[in-house]
Length: 311
Image (cartoon, rainbow, N blue to C red; front, side):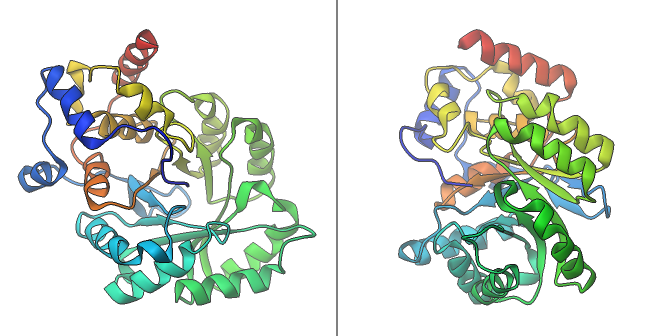
């Protein structure tokens, strides 16, 4: 998942909007210092292993940001987060993650996911996996996903072989565009899939009526990507002109980013979501969404109605 680019809501703006709505936002560090709410986790259907509902996307991780990223990953683990999602296609992301995880000594505390593809222009799958191992400085992966559905049929026998050899624990596939959802559903019904990663947000609900029912039926875990609305973070931009709803406090959300993340992971099919972040203050604010309570079905409808009415 790519970190937000272009116009986006600053945490200062979010706090201002929250105060205007009469809720009284706190900065992330203060809210964590005072928080006593338990960490929200959800189970992976195929195993029962539980994951914290807020992870991190690392499309924007680069060597140039190495030193400022170290405290981001350190803080994430301190706050109970564990899911780190990357891909060879994300430039230096795998390499930087491998370096930081080794420096921090946190490999046994994270759920590490990366991706691969197949095709005429793609490296051999074995070479891709070995390169990911080398860059990530590990000998096993928690999750290996076919990126953008590119070569699922070709790669699946190899994924199963690696899974049996315990090189990878879970296997899955990803997309970040709604036009891929029908194809993803076909593949979910054809193969024994542990995870799918799919685009989903308050303003992009297609997955809720397409991929999610299939995931619940097939007992497949779901990672929701682009939870802030596409790679530009369109929902955060739009939220700058929308007061935070008074009922946000019922879910323990003190700003729009937290509320948007809580909405995403409150869907019964969603196991977790990955929000891009390269700054500690943003990471802390995102991780706050993994505390307190999540909207129930009625709360989700109320939030959808509020969002749609403001459009």
